Structure formats: C-alpha cells, structure tokens
Image (tube, rainbow, N blue to C red):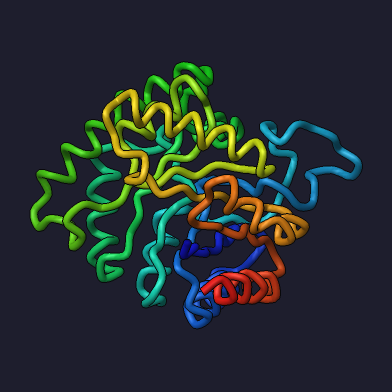
Length: 270
C-alpha cells in the first residue's frame, strides 16, 4: 500500500520568516501534505513563571504565536506541491459559513490544494482570553455537528466555486460515540493519534460507523499525527493499524532530519 506523509509545523516560538522558511523547506522535500494548528497561544515552551505547574488547558506557556488562517494563506503563496490545511481548525472560533468562504479563497490562492480541517475544540485559554464560550465537551461536539452541514451548504453556493470540485474535509478526534460518527457522515479524512493499538481500535470503530451510515469505509482517508521522535520507529505499526497518511508534528527549532527520515521510509516502501 502506498502511504502518504506530511508535516505539521507548530506556529509558535518563531518569527514569521522562520516559519515560512520551514514551510518552503518541506515543499522542497516534496512532502505530500503540510499543516499547522489552530490556536492563539503556545501549547508548550517556557512557562509564564519559573517552576509554575498548570494543566495544558490553562496554558502556562508564553512566547510568540501566529494566527492560523492568515498564516495558511502565506503558506499557500509560498509553496506549490503539498496539500495544505489545519490539523485541525477549531469549529468554535469562526462562523462556519465564513470558514467555508475562507477555505474557498485559499483554495484558489493555493491552486487547489486546501484541505478543510476541523474539530470541536479543547484549548481553554484560547476560549477564555478571546471571549468565546468554552462550554463543555458535549456542547462543543453538538456545535460541530450543527455547523458541518452549514459548511457544506455554503461551499456549494460560493461564486466562484472552489478550484477543487469538493474541498476535502478532515475531522480530527477519537470520540467513539459522536466524533467518529461525524467523520463517517461528513469527512474525507480522519486524523487520530497513537499509540498504534489505540489507533487501530479507533480505526475499527470508524469503519463500523461508516457501515452503519451507509458510507464506503475506504472513502475516508485515515491519517495519524505522530508527535514524539520515538514514534518514527513505529511507522510500520501504524500502517498495520490502518494509517494511510502519516503526519509528523514539528516544533521549534525546526529540523529537517525527522522529515527526511519519514520520506526515506516512504520511498523505501515504494
């Protein structure tokens, strides 16, 4: 089986120029996909105060950070080969019909390479500091389920339409009762996480949901985000667990060594 590979660049603790050079380097290496996340504050790095301990949802970390959609537009302008998108965008932060219009516009800017990634959201500091209602995990999932049809309806109405006949939709998350059902109903790509045995279990549940809603399970591309260097030694295990597209998360300072290792593994598979 041919496996696609990608890179998620973390838009934190760097200058715009540094981020752009990293995106260009990935493009030159010919990765299949290039992603960034959708947050307003760093998820890790130097804490606000020495020895401060707080859960990641409280975001004790400080440092530079960049907004996702405007930065993705720059990536669209300065790359030419990979699919580009957010892994994943937060449903809570923007009107869904506006998101559809933004995705359509960046699809044209990129020459038809956009994937519209979306999830229900989880990072509490983003919500509280930007004035969004955090709600509960259940309420955020309900909001996502409500907004997905609106996204699709607006994409179908836009003039001019996207360059791609249908912009691919990625949904991230592993919730077995709601999220994976939404993937089966709406998504072209699903992103999950390891370890491989966990990924395999979630992958099977997604297949079951596809069958229940009358969807061909093969029509949903299975992606996995690997976030630790040691996971590069388990790539074959992820493929055995059902992954078709492996995405390497990279923080700063950016290094191509992990990307090159991933590409060498891909090319050796043929």
